[in-house]
Length: 224
Image 1 (cartoon, rainbow, N blue to C red):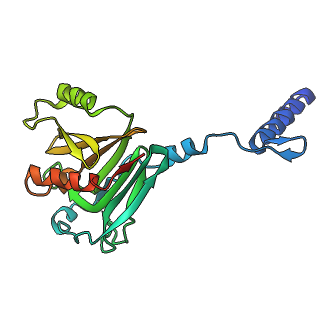
Image 2: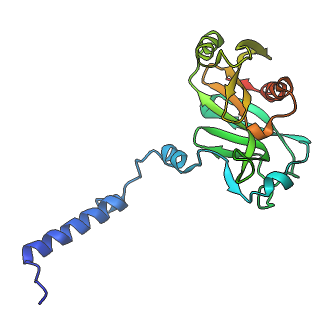
C-alpha cells in the first residue's frame, strides 16, 4: 500500500517548488527582475576550446590542398583592444564541404585560416583544424616575454628573439609539439598580449617561411 505524505510535508514540498520557480523567473513584487548572471562568462563557457575535430582518416590523404587567401577579413575585439585583418577566401570549406566563416570564436581567442588535415598516428585517425590561432594573454613587455620563453623553450634549436611588428614589439619562439615544431609569435599590447600560433598541418615548407606567415598576419595588428 502506498504511503500517504503528511500534510506538513506536502506544504513544504509546495513551498520548495514555489521558491524554485520564483528564483528561476526572478519574480519580485509581481515584476520580473533582470538577470544578474555574467552573460559574457556564460557565452565563453559555451564556446569550443579548439577548432579540431576528428574526420574520415582518408581525408589526410585526399584533402591536402586549399585555395590561397584572396582577401582580408576585418576582426575587432574591443575587450582586448585589438583590430586586425585575417587572411580569407570564400572558397575555403569545412570538413563537410560547408563554407567557412572568416574565424571561429574559441574560449580564449579565435581560430582562422583554411581547414588543414593531419594525423599523429600514421594515418589511423585524421584531425581537421583551422590553420592558425590567436589567443590573448595579460599585457607584458617583450623583454619579459623573451625571458619567460627562454626558460621554457630556449632549447628547441631556434632562438627566442624580439622583433618589431610595425610599431609593436613581439617575441618569436618555437613550441615543440609531439610530431612537429611550430613557430609562435607574441605581440605586446597595452591592454593584452596577442599570441599567434599555427597547426602542425599548416607548416608551410621551411620553418622560416612558416614564421614569416605569422609575421605577415601580425603586421595588420593595431593595438589600443
